[in-house]
Length: 313
Image (cartoon, rainbow, N blue to C red; front, side, top):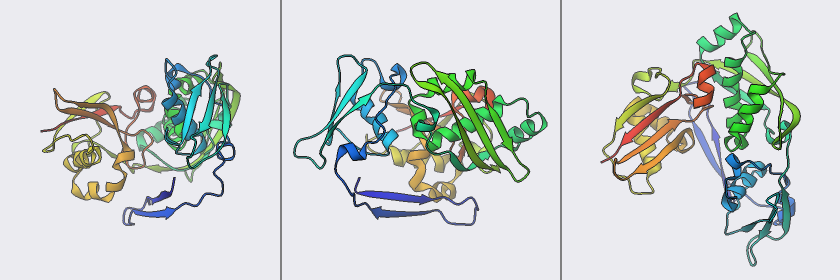
């Protein structure tokens, strides 16, 4: 990476959203010093079947905070499928070769960001937990989405993390009167997670996010919201389509306020279909801006999983 963009998104609504681009100067081009997380547990869900070098590289990048592409490195799947060789391209910008081993990891390793900062909950969920803190699953399910947003490894190992969550004997949630809290998770999943534990810290902000629905109405779970757009799909205008979706549903002022962020706040669930001329989107679970949940967590959290069906010209 040669540049980075720092995004500041204040919680106070009368403060501006700011971005700043900076240039990056690297102190080394040695692959063995840049890639420091050399474990990658094998999971068909995460790595794919048959094993896909491009997907392996994506996960390695997430675990190491890097942005290597196939132009920089080659990923070789070793015959036993239990390790990978990562080697730099001859004549490229980097040097070195190393082994990535398929082995179980700990929660501490794959959740390096434990200080979650501000998280965003509905008052209904918070009050239900406050009145009955023994019913921990709804609150814990909601918190897991924020841990996943801050630690993107979760997106590739969601089934394993869900299994650890559901089988955990050590879930604990504490939130004090100032809305500062901790979330403790302990568990294990064979071949993916060693028996380990992690504690997250956070501050709760209530009723801050909007539903990506007309008039900011809370959708029913599994709802499909139809949005006709006066746009054509060109293959490289997804960000423009995302913007038009938000503008159509929640208005130009809100769409403009976060225009540079919609690529990261709205996922493509189903790519463009040339026959129906439709793209299916959904709001990112754990978003600071939009309220939603993923399908599994919605069964516990009380936040709906819903999709936006955009029909183009």
